[in-house]
Structure formats: C-alpha cells, structure tokens
Image (cartoon, rainbow, N blue to C red; front, side):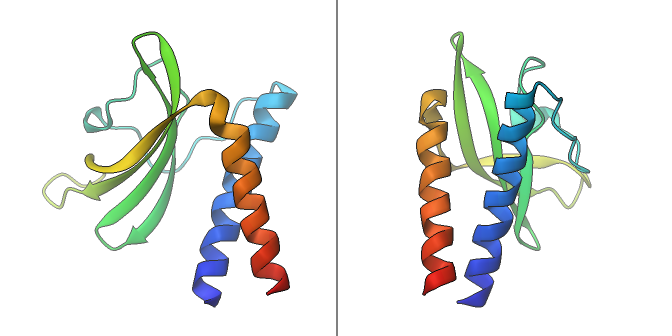
Length: 118
C-alpha cells in the first residue's frame, strides 16, 4: 500500500504544481521527456506530465485540443524500443472536459488525505 501512497502523492504534487503555475501566470516547468509526433498533441497545448508506470509504459497527463475545445487527457503510452524517447498512445485512457480538472484535483486530494489518515 505504501507504493500506492507514494504514486498518489507524486501525481497530486505534479498536478498541483501545474495548476498553481497556471493561476499565478507562470509558465509550467518542462518535463525532461520531449513530446513526440506519436502523442497527437498540438503546438497550442502545454507540455504533458509523464509518470512512469513500469519499464515499458508511462501515463501521460496533459491538455489536448479537439475540434476547438480543450480536454484533460490521461492516457497510457508505450515506449518504443526501436525509437528511444518515442511514446505511442494507447486506447487505455480517458479524456475529460477541461472544466472537470478542479473535480479531478479535489478527488486526488481527498484520496491523499484518506491515505494519510488510514
């Protein structure tokens, strides 16, 4: 269970850092992993956050644009061994309307509080 707590805290800290930068007008800090063509992110979107799931898979959290609307995109990406640094999105994931971001953050904070007290 401690590994789950650590991952939940790590995810929450990354999301909080990105939202506090957005609210203060600061630019988000770029991740150490570049966006690749396979990720289907437009130039207008922010650099996504990657969380290592295992040796071959990352979870990408980012903002994407589709038909003129912004979406919170949480998706698994597999790492291409033939092209180091290349991430290819899978069907495993979810896209939510960007106005659901506050609900997602509140839900993660509630989980973090439950893990800390439990």
